[in-house]
Image 1: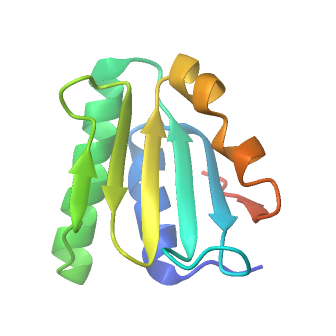
Image 2 (image 1 turned 135 degrees about the horizontal axis):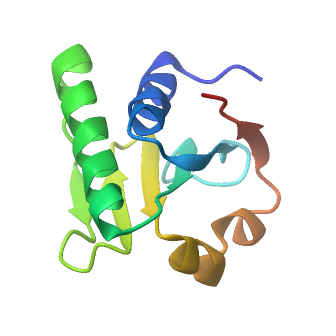
Image 3 (image 1 turned 135 degrees about the vertical axis):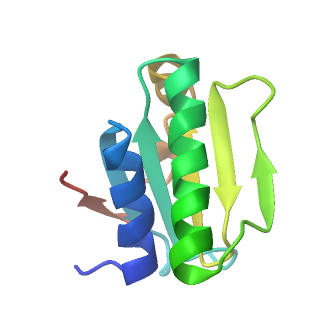
Length: 115
């Protein structure tokens, strides 16, 4: 399955900041609020902020796009960037395991994003 270019650019920005386990979930068949989730992990809180900043900067510069909603900067364990047609979820390993969005959205088509 091919991902939209904008989701690929967001993933590339995350990978440039050494994000790990970058995965896209195609939610189109079962969700009406967004088309894709882009999930990525960061080694620590400092890195999660760097990844979130890089994704926002890349999409702002290349696509003139800003997230409609941002959550998680104060705690820096799970940052969410909502771009409407896709939502970026950046996690520390502990939070990714705890929330386990891949299991929760198990019916979604999973697309591994390689660096």
